[in-house]
Length: 174
Ligand SMILES: CC(C)(COP(=O)(O)OP(=O)(O)OC[C@H]1O[C@@H](n2cnc3c(N)ncnc32)[C@H](O)[C@@H]1OP(=O)(O)O)[C@@H](O)C(=O)NCCC(=O)NCCS
Image (cartoon, rainbow, N blue to C red):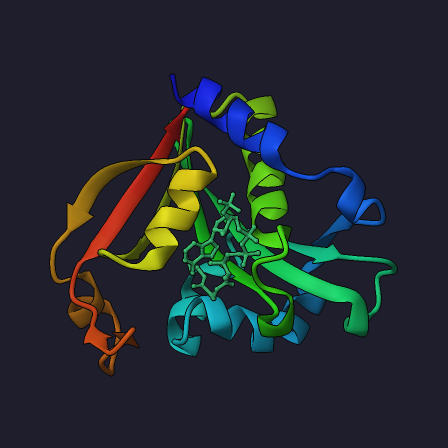
């Protein structure tokens, strides 16, 4: 069921529009260079430091692998037992709503499928528009972790004028 939704969403992506896209895995020593964009996906540097080294960082470029061509970043972690998680996803503000976020998600979904994953999770602020973005990418709502933001961040996280409390998890089962 989820696979069919992902397939439909993938077919919606205009492949020709982004003919010069490349996605590179970033080496351990270069990860810190991507902090400015990672902070868009997760505004706590302390939180990013908790997962950046155990996760794989991918960068999506439109033409060449240069800083000005960087469009999106994503951190994927292997949580064991076939469970993977997108810990961070961010598209450069001036390039949002151009399909780059979806391209990155599909790349990660394919990677997980090839790795024999059982489930790919992503967590985001409850009721956020980001939930609808992930649903359009083929994710379905999973569980809620109540009080996640208060428990894990040292300052309030405000999204669309609302102070985030709970984490909404979404999932794709393979
Ligand atoms: C959320 C984010 C990753 C989406 O990436 P994007 O490249 O802008 O999204 P895409 O262009 O690939 O959009 C794919 C679909 O989702 C929809 N969508 C994207 N952002 C949306 C939003 N904020 N509200 C509603 N729908 C949205 C698009 O309209 C598109 O739908 P369509 O198929 O009907 O055309 C990006 O906006 C971003 O980096 N935001 C700031 C950081 C963030 O919130 N990261 C998520 C943390 S988990």
